[in-house]
Image (cartoon, rainbow, N blue to C red; front, side, top):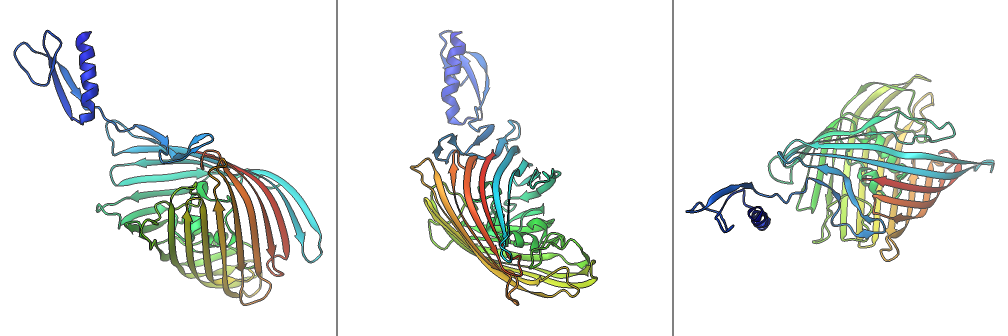
Length: 444
């Protein structure tokens, strides 16, 4: 027993020395030795004690919230016999309860509805195949029970991509293959678990469908950074689904059939010009920690989209182009983010006998302030202005939003309450919509 106790104490001390293997010997007095000798007998061989965690979830750099530290996105499992391989699994659920009033500006008639639905339901998995390669995917059922019909949507694949990280041992060049986001908009690239408001700006949602289906049609992309000061992404792949992008009147092109469509292509560059203000994580929620300042611009093109609108047999021949400019920064509790968008070859009205095309421009600004001394309550505001068809009057729209989030455990557990007012011009719908939302999120 004394020999075993001595060996245990010795191994506990030696484990911090990071020895790969150790053979121990003992004498009749119970003294331990690392080498053979007269009067010593072999006690056994002992392997190095690893200090690498095998299962991790907590974000160690996180502040201490009311319910504890924030978790990483997904729990990570590392096998003992292959530490370069790993598996991640996690869930994300967002709930919304809302009361909405829609007013027809032409008649001043209004209607009120109330709804509760699951804004996002996600099961996320990822696997590391070795030092450089990994796979990420999720299946999702978003907006389940939305509307008076309580529609139960089917599950669909969201992300599904292979990431090849630093194949040449430099952060300057990495690759993603298959269903990965292209950076058409900062707020669309930020994970929905880390956005300030679950429903992104309308103009950003337009950008998400304008170049590639849900900004993640199957593609090949290269990306990287230089000392976190310069970031870039270039990509090409499957272009947009015409049934999802909208005309200037807000109608989807569900009756559009394409006979010919090219790949999309383009890229984005972002710069953090000041030392100590580099962007390390693309997010909208900073929990009152750190600082960053980033400016960026992207340009994306779908050169060829030819087809017909089947209701009126109107011919379609489009060249989609999207320019996006972003500015984001935060200093401890204060965050400010803004984006500008310019679209070319926007269809005025899909149901017209002859499809008229033009341009569209707009922007949004979002700001949040985290009250770290007041249980991480975070008031926020957002303003959006969008001219959906610049060639004609009456297609302007604005959206104003104000609310407060309560970070009970960072983004892992949070609730929010906000008011939103949307005003659409004469040709864009001619309505005023007021919405009060209570939101919640759980994820790990």
